[in-house]
Amino acid sequence: MQKFANRQNIRNEIMSLIVESGMDDDCYTEMLDYTIELFETQGLGNDYYGYHNINHELEVTYVTLLSANLNNTLNRFSESDLKYLYVSALFHDFDPQKSVDKPHEENVLKFISMDKRLRQLLDIAKLDIEIIKALILRTTYPWSGQLKENAEQQINECFKKSEVTKNDEVKQEHYLNLGWYLSVIDRISGYALGDFSKAMEMAKMNAHALAWRPSLIVRSSVAYFEELLNKETEMCQFILKSLPKHMRKNFFDTVLSFMSIRQQEIAIQANYTFDNLKLVPTIEKIETRKDPEFIKSLYSIFLELPKPLQFANDSFEESVKDQNIIINTIRLNDCKGEIVGFAKGGPLENYRLRPEIRDENYGLNNTIFLEPLALKMGYWGLKGGSEMRHMFIMQAHAKKYKYLTSFALRDVIKSRVDREDAEFVTKFDPERWDYYRVKI
Image (cartoon, rainbow, N blue to C red; front, side):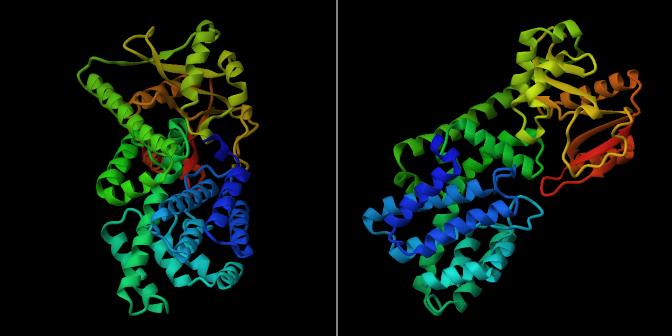
């Protein structure tokens, strides 16, 4: 749904559903605008490249109200239920001090308990904050093991404190089911509101923010959907049946697409294991690098990277043709085969990095910056990336560079500290995708 790419559009759609849900008081509109303001001022707006940003919060709120209103033709939800679902959806992931992308429910509860403005709005709406806490706690994911036990214990405490649910097991069960409803919508909503390209971008955002290796993106996405459809079958079907046909189609198209790509990944890995497929690192000649088809093939792989890892997008073609830029590729089977990945980089002074980075060698012309390695989906985890990186370091050594800097996952850099004498220059949270240096 292209209309939800615009923040104002989804706000207006939520506003319409607020009215439809019988929430006429201004306090509900104020809650919506206050949420947007909070996310923006805490750096969790458009510029935050993580799954749990303001867009996710608004998408969950929109789909919650849409589904509940459509389901309400059977009077499944009272007006009070709709109000509790709305507020819980709106604030379910607000963790302004996040050290990792995945919100800590305890931090969310602390915020909604301590924020004076929100408490005033809840008082005006006559909503019980303990019930809202219980609904948010039920969105804990995964709902299993110690996480589930801790959440259930806290939910029981909330029910004991609430005048609405205290000593009333029927109402407690009712709000537990509302929380279950919200938790499944939390996991469905983003995938129902757009096509597969949106879903893949969400998966990349999730992987980047949680510091996953790229080889896990599709595998983890398939496991995520299988768990949702197999372990949450009853609630999942109930919600999907309530959504418009095109939204159901979006969701299932996404599931099938991820499963199809996973099959392709397995086939690639099998061919590699049985030596039917070889990855050949290749130093590309400058004549080849001027070929429009070569540039096009590299750029298509480049676009598969998460957006924060797409350095110098606007000058990509010029940089490929630049003799001062080092480029090598991974080709299939021989040095003339299909390109499935590339390594690229140049003088540190050519790049505008994050403002937090203070590299002492900047301006000394002794450091080469290696852009994030780019590989086609399906070829991660086959050691092609490390082969390109080692070849890049050899090329940099030949050009008399003293240092190489780049970005990598924190755990990967730690493994290189002893092996390559790597050092952290700047660490970044919540991504844990850090800037490091090695001596060549």
